[in-house]
Length: 544
Image 1 (spheres, rainbow, N blue to C red):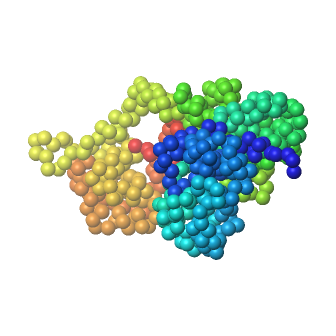
Image 2: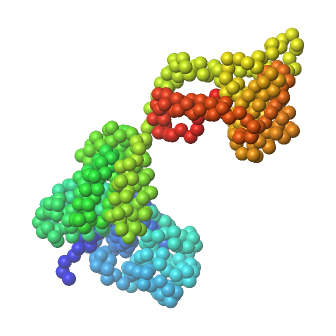
Image 3: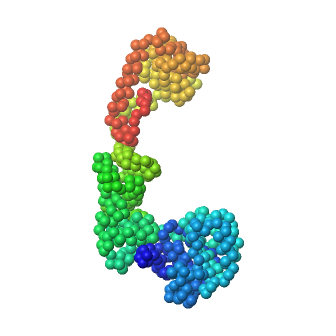
């Protein structure tokens, strides 16, 4: 075929023409000038970033009739033959189809012979990680001490699959993904050279779709040129690539942030009807919210977001009224759901479920706002006389120890006072929780049902285990000790199980009072505000 695709037509022929790999090309140029080129080099990195092209340029530089030279002339016989791929002294081997030990044995036999008319015999093995383990082992000795006229150049996309014994015998060069701006600049120059009209936004889309690969970018541009001939519109480029318009991505993200499920599902349905890949859309949405998070971090985060300037401005406007915590919540949800959508047999349903879930997420309150609200609540608590009074009642009781001197003891506490049975029982529970916490779980399932002149009656509302626990000898002794400290006299303790001889009226009365107090506490304005701050719920209410 006479037509040459852009990826081959614009393949770099000198180190200066290589895009985005200056750290490798400069090292190789310096090595050539200083006559310090290693006998085995490994070029590792993603696809389509120039590994094989740099290997060919290095081969030309080493075998150039005017060299070795950092800049090959590209006019001598050796340079022309290498450019056309017909040089007998530069052998390009596909590691995937020549991966066995027999091929390596043949290579090892051939390297003994001197090059035909060049300075070096150069072996370029592409995808070298595909060689078998026996093939690598057969190459070890030759790779470590090759003849002076032999140079090995290995290229791979998976350096981790190469044995360490091979890596230790090579000079390793890491090739990087090509930056978005570098790809954009190269595509623009090619379009100007071919008089092809295309907008910068479309070129940006091509560069973004290439994902750091110059070869992929040139292949996409070749496809657009074949479809549009002399000029391409933005809509045509979107149709060719099957990509989602960035305006739609912004519309979807705005609907999700506004919790407008109907609008989000409508946009999703439109994309589905147009035939867009929804699995790819989920990745694009996750990437978009990643960009929004970085933009929300503030100034200095721009280089981490490779988007046009006008899109960056739109992102800043989009996150202006959204908290960082809310954005992070949406991003985490999208990222966690991406795998499920990718593996789902019905990605549309999975995406709809995800969008509904995102629209139902409660807004996350920033920590600074929570602290401010807590400080406001604290001020209200201090000014609330009712809560202050309750706090004093709960914390005001300090039991007196029986070992105090006789002249310092307080008079006996009267058994009949203005305090209710529930209040007396709550004060006793405070003493138990401080000195005998093991009994508290059982005492919480009991009430003080009666006080006589020389006895008190405790009614157990729990099961028979609680009754037996309180009636054992050790527990009775503890109860008598605490009651003696509280009432300043010896009293008989009666433990009665609910429904068996106990007076039911006081019990019902106390239970009704407890329910009323719990209901009043739940209806208090401060409790409601605290629940709003923490977005929580009440588990239990303790009446003190």
